[in-house]
Image (cartoon, rainbow, N blue to C red):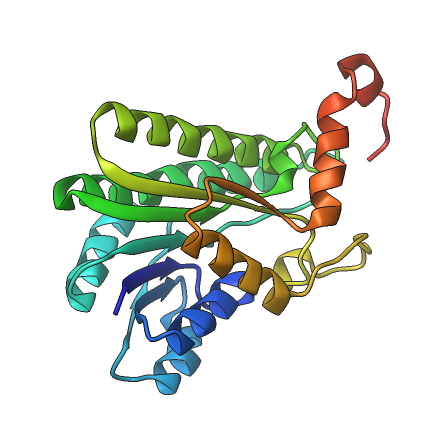
Length: 240
């Protein structure tokens, strides 16, 4: 049985992926800021689920990850699903800084620790949910789109470094479109909303298929391909 660590497993895509991997026979170490929200997963398979409280923005998050790995008895796959995102058309500083703290610093802290563990072990697979939001700078969510672009590039850089060092570490950068989770709850209606369970199934297929980069789903693959072709002088005039 594969041993999988999932960060951000208390809701949304993280929880849906956890349920699919449990059904597949995996052993899971699941973490979130609030450990009590992980009990539903624990109850599904108490002998195959280890839980932990990890806040990716905390200084002790990396050491807590190591403790969770030890509690699970090892790690073959590291799946990262933590993150925040808000529209911020008025550029409120607390939103911008909180987003950077979670999506950039927290991401780097946890992905980096998983990478170092796999480098010591000699093999492993890192899969992370980023977003199509990193394709272009979005005026409605500046720090969100910027941090998602950073995540895309960071994973690409680590993949290059692992190959240069001869490390058998695989990477999967998962870029969903708008998914109907708590992250996008609110008064604003997002177009082409995706269902978390369907997205989770595509994520698991991509990880099993050892994909390097996957955009979910086909509508967003078309959309992001078009976004990349929009000239800068046109993009800056769009009201998104």
